[in-house]
Each structure stands twice: as structure tokens, then as C-alpha cells.
Image (cartoon, rainbow, N blue to C red; front, side, top):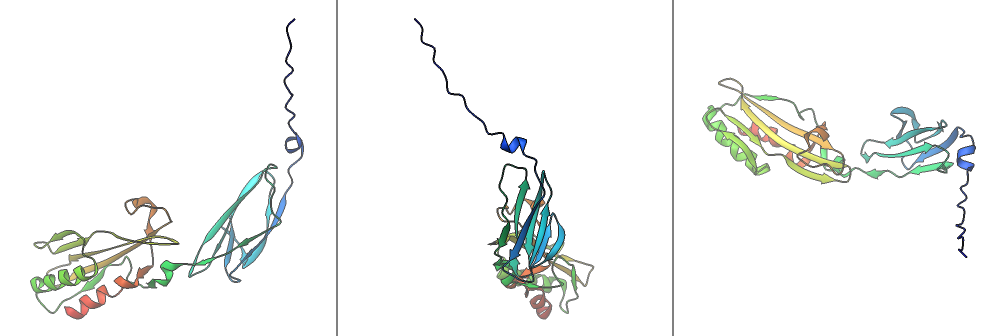
Length: 216
């Protein structure tokens, strides 16, 4: 006589499927009372906000303040995940901000008219740039063109890369540019598409143009 094995029946709770998903509210607060709170990119308040999460939708809540590392969190109201009634965002100081200065010379062509000849000026320019960045990618003496390699500096808020480009602008003038760009944490220095122009320059490079102007 054959035995019939009775397999246990897996009972699946249909509560999540049968229950109607409702709109929810989450009270958001932040460690910085004047931080900007945004929901899906739209302003929701300063320091905190009560946000409404519609049924069957997701939202990205972000907190940001100058000098601090912006943080974001995402919630989805799908009936499967229990949503909190409140969420606290702790902002951290942006170390890249602390190590840099805001300046109007970042990513801008600055014209310099030296008092010396182009040949003399070129020697002085090369010597000075090498004191700041010793990795030169291109140095064309005949055409008076110099471009340093990108130099990367990693911080908690992302990756900062800096380079200097110098070229002639007529027989009696040079153009100097400090390129300063920033990408989110985890980016590689070679991933150009992840970088955006930054309106700040790391302090260790901020005096390059001023020194060149003084020497020429």
C-alpha cells in the first residue's frame, strides 16, 4: 500500500494585497534648523516639514545647507513597507567646503598681460605651476600651451578634481583657467559625465593666478 505524503499548505497572508493603500504623512526634521527641505526636488520648507506621500507612489526627501553634506532618503507607499511617522536627518559638515574658497575665477578664462617677453613669462609660468601641480599633461613651448593633469581630492561629500590650463591669447597676453569640478561620492576621476563645474576652488590652488600675475 502506497503512502500518500501530505505536503503542508503554505498560507499566504493577503492582507497587503486586499487592503487598500492609503495616503500617508511623514514628519521630517533636520539637525540644521535652517536647512532646505525638498521633496522630489521641490521645496517643502526649512528645517523640517510634514510631507504627504500619496498611495502607490515614492518620494525622495532631501536636506541641504551651505557648508554641509546634503543627504537624501526615499520612501515608497506601496502597502508592503511600514512607513515611519517621523524621520530625522542628521547633516554632516562638508569637508570639501571647509577646504575651499568661493571665487569668481573658477572655470573662467583670466587674461594676463605680462610685462616680460612671452618667452621669459613662459618659463616663470611653468616654474610656478609645477609648485602647485607637478603632473603636466601637455606643455607646448612653441605655441605657449600648458595643461596639467587632473588632480583628485576625495572628501565625504564627493570627489573634487582640479586642473590648470594656460595658453597664449595674442602676442602680448596669456589666458589662465583653473578648472574646478565636483562629483558625488564613489565617482572615478576619469568619469567625466559625473562631474559638474564647482564654483569653489580648493585653498591649496586658489592663489595660482594671483601669484602668476605678481611674477609677470
